Image (tube, rainbow, N blue to C red; front, side, top):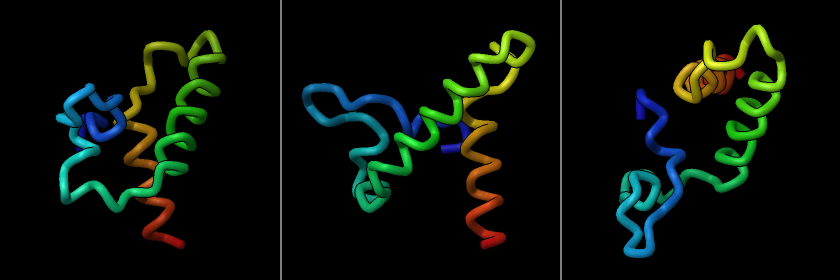
Length: 67
């Protein structure tokens, strides 16, 4: 989603957004890539708490469309 809620971890009853039928085809490694990118950004002190997961998803979506 636009707020990056699609990367939230599933609950025991699979009610997270990424378990939705519309999102079930999203590859798991894509989630891992976004989480790793966010961790890399947060490792830079001046970037920590300034770049959100939604920002990372927006840039990744832009790049995928461009490819």
